[in-house]
Length: 160
Image (cartoon, rainbow, N blue to C red; front, side):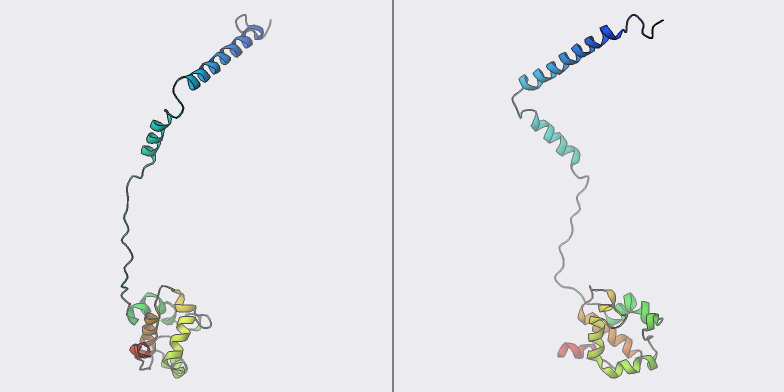
C-alpha cells in the first residue's frame, strides 16, 4: 500500500498549487499597478497611522523661572549637609562640636566657604549638590560653624 491516497498524489497536486499561486501573484500585481494612480492610497494610510500614534495626553511644562529664591542656611544644612555633619560621617566635623570646628573656624569664613564650594578631602564640591548656589553654601557654612562656636555673617561675603 502506498503512503498517498488517490486524491493527493504528488504528481497532480504540486503543479496545481504552483499554478494557483502564480495566478494569485499575477492578480495581486495587476491590482497593485493597474488599480489607482501611484500615491493615491498613501494619504488615507498616513492619516490612519497618525491617528493611531497620536499621544493620549499632552503635558505642558511651565517655563523656568528666572528668579530663584535662595534657600536659607538651615534649609541647606537639613537638606544635605547634616547627612555627614550631624553624625561625623567620613571624619566631618559634627555640628555643635566646638573642639572639632575650632581649627576650621580659625581658617576664616572665606576659606571655609571656598573649601565647601570647591570640595576638600572627602567632601565633594558643594556637598555633592551642584544645584546649590555659592550664596546657599555660604549660608550653610555660617549656620554650621555658628552652632559650633563661630560668629560668621553670611552677608559679609556678599559685600565683598
